[in-house]
Image (cartoon, rainbow, N blue to C red; front, top):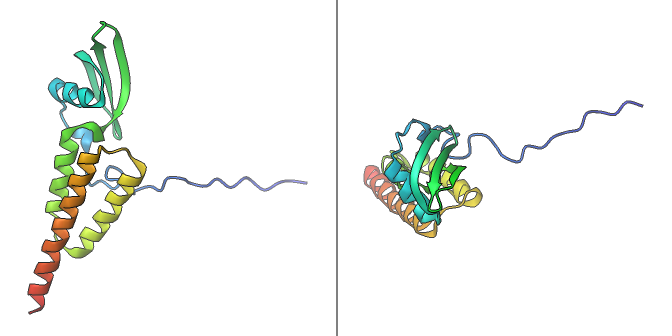
Length: 145
């Protein structure tokens, strides 16, 4: 007569993206108005002036005036900022071992699959991953000799 409780599937696994795995902590960035204007311009928004920036753990809340003097407020991913790309590239460059590179590569491939990246950014990060792999393989081969 009694039914068992419904099983809930988790669609998102924790620790899979760069923020949840504590590889990058963008909520500690001090994002300037100029960075916000540049990022929103790339996304296609016409920003006249930034009113307020509130950094949360996984996204940033931006309030701004558009070209028609309307106040707009929305949540944006940190992935729209140029600083995101430079931080990920630094993370790739400072990857010390092949095993660490494999973990990082898995996380970044998850990022590409589940989050929207501009094609230029995804290509640049893929190239950085590939270059770092070649460097790590070469140093591993030299260590064997």
